[in-house]
Image (cartoon, rainbow, N blue to C red; front, side, top):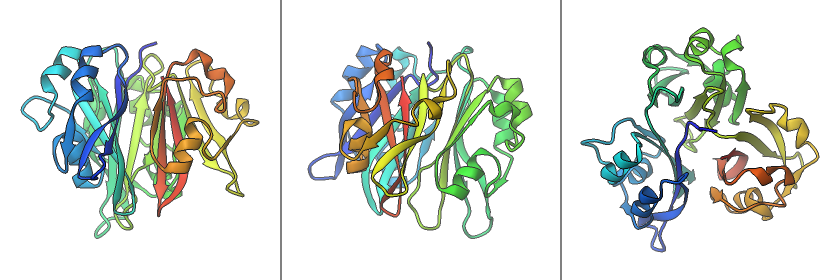
Length: 307
């Protein structure tokens, strides 16, 4: 199965916490690009991870040529043309930067967007930046619309301060661009709050088609009412969209398995190993990214991407 995201990386502060070093990554067979990446370091405001660290919010870099991207030649050779960096903060302090890398081709339909509000003038969200691949009409429309709190995918994530997953988004009346999404072949969307700033809000939205999903499975996990376990609230799979019911008896304990480690540390995790404490049905899936959603220093949710 082809997925919309081709490379996933985690960059973490070094021992002095003044530079970012390679933490882990998923490269899908792009071994040369992996080798070019593992020895990299990024100072504050340097390269894509460093720029996201300095900006304090997600960054989309739609073209590598003549940019601050440090691995342009290796990326071009690997067919990668776009990068998205998501910094994960606890208060003022950076925990990690998650980087997604994608490539332009006609077979990959989808979009990754950064939405933000203007706390001084508007009580609505607009697209700060985005990657739309070949979907030019959808991109033009998206850059001109505004959504209020609780409106559409980004607005719902903003209002709830939790990840929101909408399956069959092209037929969802709450999604402002449903007709255009249907025309573009977009079928699923997830919105994720990614800023811990008290006034400025940033929401990431990931939109993908059935033929090239973001990942093989996506699930949203949240702490239960007593804060003792993580439970699956929503899930998406190309083959089975009823994942929440499948996993309603599966719980995650703090510190146990990949998801439990994210809950314990606040750090994103990439794993290529089987996670028996996570759930036994994932044996056919080779790797996972677990992305924490943190607000006011507390874990609100974990979004898991299974590749």
